[in-house]
Length: 634
Image (cartoon, rainbow, N blue to C red; front, side, top):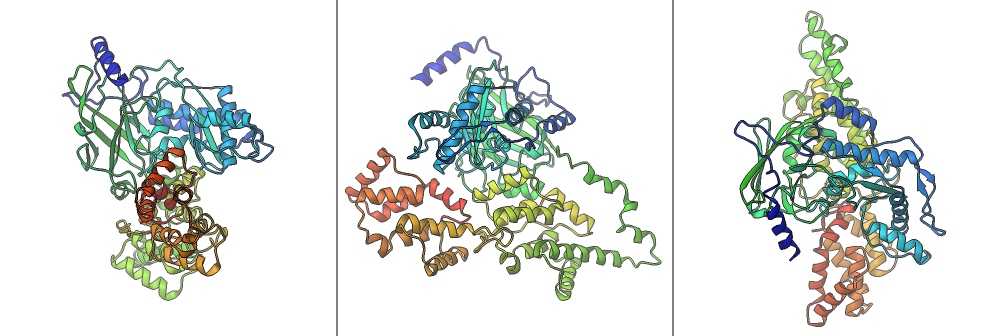
């Protein structure tokens, strides 16, 4: 009834409101964000981001919080609060939205929320009350986290949470992009931040701002846009002004994304898309995350990596067909985004190309009488292969191996990316069992020729923890503009992306760089502790780990092995206790009363325990748990 009334009132207002702009016959495009706020130049955007970096050297806390008894909310330093507010306002300015203010009362509430979530040990908007936490502390923290942006992936870097909420493209979040949309709410006026033990809270459910006149809000925003803020796996979003556009119906829409070379991706409401994996995605979400009417889409990730590598590059045109204004008149929408490199280090990388005389690789070509033409190519290719041995395997090349790979590259049978793949996924490399963090750090050195920056490292780790395989991440680096330039320096072709296998490579033992245990061990240990209520025996642990690493068993297979083992069945759980165990093991939480009652009723009415098990392991929550350990659910 409320939606009908709102629609009626909006229709009545249509006579006095301006109609949304659309592409006209002359080929002009609409602008996202405030209609009165000028678009920024590339230089202005670079300066804005340099003034509001994702990393700050300031102390995090003014008063240290405590997530253990006796609990203390603590307080963030004024420098960090200013940095987080500044970073958010930088995102909003690029999107064409007015700035927000930091509110001290919001900060205090958010700090209680961060401590509560850190103490509970689980990222949740409804965390359980620790036994030793008093009611007043818990209730204040719960009020804060029940309506906020929340993350637990920013250890030591609270400002980076702003970028993470803008990303918002994991399987759980991509259908709504709620965190991003709250940050880009035009009427947002005040925000507050809290942080404790890697948990960040943003109090952002606010509508006290004056807002602005706009047709639509997009991310990436129209006009110049820093490619560093939008990676290949992130979803595009278009939020339509509900005072100008009728509520969009997914089945009526067609969205087209086109790059400057003419390659197009089309998303249609009459097709089916899934929100997990790296395939194409399309959705319309009408929930009011700040503003309703949000169109969400993402091309096949492999397509973008093949074209542009880690980042988009150049001009992309977005066209939306099937929209209507409030009078019911059909209107189309079109806008353009020009991606550019806004990283501070981007300019120095191009300098050597303007000074060829400083590169010894080119000098022999000016003296053919002393250096036969083929010899410089032999030397540069040899240096490329030697670099892979030293960076990836940590050793000097053996003579036979070096000559073999040089011959492969010389003959053109494989490009730089394919040869690098053979190093990174060799048995020698895989036996190093690098954890996600050290794996990403190595890819930075091998493919980008530099150390990982903190924001990039955090972003890539988050991608891997969402279920993206090591092979897919490898493609992201191997197809990057930076690696293409590196191959060119050595006189070889980059080649094409590798074909990603059905199952990704996962480490089987402790990381040789930092000693961190392989995630797969944690997955199996967790099932022992929850399902069998004991620590794993060495033989059983080794067997299950091997089954997962070799892909003989999926996450579901291993889970089935525990739940239907003689040891588990010998506990003779009642239907209610059986369901409670499934909640803990496969959803990572305690059962809620309504859910428990529903599942128990099914069992009491004759549904088998196997069928109920399938319902739990087929859930998105169990999929996410498997992904967080780097394995496939199956």
